Structures are given as structure tokens and as C-alpha cells.
Image 1 (cartoon, rainbow, N blue to C red):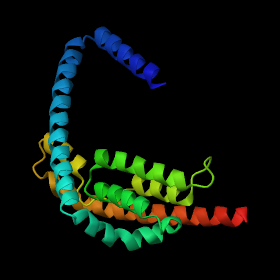
Image 2 (spheres, rainbow, N blue to C red):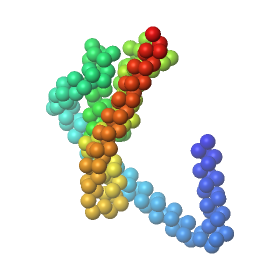
Image 3 (tube, helix red, strand yellow):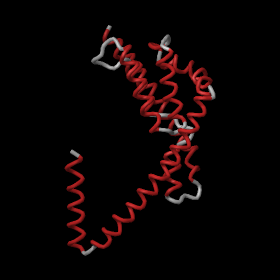
Image 4 (cartoon, rainbow, N blue to C red):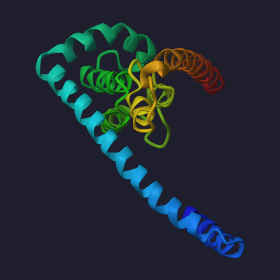
Length: 196
């Protein structure tokens, strides 16, 4: 669908620019946005390299195991179905840690790995398990202590204080994650009662 919509937008925009005599502005906009895209990509690349390097150091220095132990009570509370599955708990913890540090791109493969492990344990392969639902919601409303992507974008656009967004992001993340978990747990409970 998008393959059809975007070309239509481009053709209509260029035709309108030709009719209204603004084709030069369109050309300038194309080159300006190309330059901005390259600068933004380089900023993202640097930020991702930095945090992936920090995660690698944390993993090799056993810091990840300490964080996993700290997260263990929360994981037991949120995912009661997997209380004895240490491998899945570690994969979920790694995903949560990557999200907390604002590493969305690094969190994605970790999340996919955790979902695959949960699917192996899932009795009904046609439906999501309760743990899988909670995990998806947790990822969607992810808590971020360091919103690296937003900071990188603000920095690349010349913000005087790119980190001023941190506190509002904490507030929004905490509120969204609490509401998301409460609603999901409530729906799971309601569904389980109906199925009995």
C-alpha cells in the first residue's frame, strides 16, 4: 500500500511545484533533506556504537548478571509462567536492559530471541501465551532511562540542551508502562475467567 501512496505523493508534489513555479524550492528541499539524513544517520551510528560498546563491556564484566539478578523479582511478578526458565528470564532481562538504555535497535534482536524461546515453551502455538503478551506490551511501552535516539535527534538538529528531554521521557515512560501492564494483566485475567 505504501509503495503506491508515496509515489503518488511525490508525483502530485512535483506537479504542483511545477504549476506554482516552486520547482527550485523542491530541488533545494531534496538536497537539504538528503544532507540532513546523512548527518542524522552518522549521529545515530555514533550513538549506537557507543551504547553497544557499553553493553558489551557490561556483558563481559558480569555487570549484566548483576542487573539480571536485580530484575529477577520484577520478571517473576510480570512473567509467572516462566519462573523456572532461566534462559528465557535472561533473554527478557537483556531486552529490558537494552530498552532502559534507549537502545531500540539493539533491543529488537534480543526481543525476537526471547519471543522465540517463549514460543518453544508455548503449549498452544496458534495463540500468544500470557507471558508473550506482557512482553510485547513491555517492549511497546518501554521504560527508558537514557533516550539515546531522541537525544541524538535533538543534538543533530542543533539543540542547545539535547538532554533536557530526559525527565519528561521518564515520566511518560513510567506512566505508559504502568497503565499498559495493568490493562494487559486485567485483560488476561478476564480472558482466563471466560475460558474456564
